[in-house]
Length: 114
Length: 113
Image 1 (cartoon, each protein chain N blue to C red):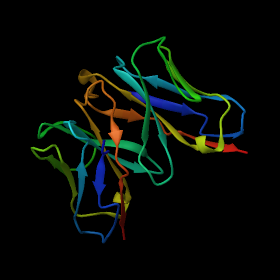
Image 2 (image 1 turned 135 degrees about the horizontal axis):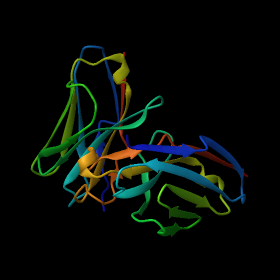
Image 3 (image 1 turned 90 degrees about the vertical axis):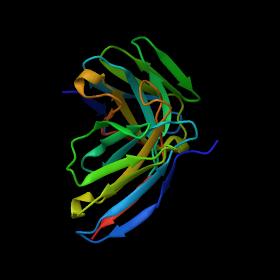
Image 4 (image 1 turned 45 degrees about the vertical axis):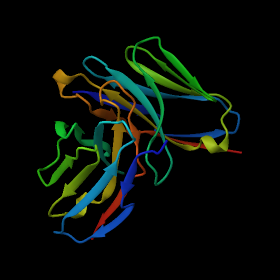
């Protein structure tokens, strides 16, 4: 069964303290891995898409990487405004019922304190 | 460029009633997906439409249904509401729905009492 597991569930950082969030996945033929940021009461905001192992993408203080079994979201020198829930999702191929469907992890709640 | 618009933002309904939620995708996007988000189950896929056709459906009862119009706008209907249907319902639009980024709306917060 296709599955996405995120760790840790919650993370508390001091402003400027870099860290990484993990997303491990089990899917028969990954078609894409997506990272989203979600603020309370709002819809998820798209951050990155990764398609193949070894791929990396960056945006401001965030960098996403992908291996054959997991993805990391690295946060460098975070600021309080980076506080949010970060969601990871995978898209599985059609033959496993994943056609045009995103399978989400439970998310990591990040709190950055000044 | 306008984002994904969902209406209404908040709804309170009584058990047994039915509800219709609306989603207007980003201009040029032809795929619309619906998700249910609850604290216990997280984000779960309901269904996806492309060019007025449902292409995939999640594991939800038949009380949950949807449709898409020729202008790509989509509606989702839940009949015979149950307390457990209380959730944030999110709509996502993408150009094709396959291997492309999906952009979410702000969601409709449904409370069933």
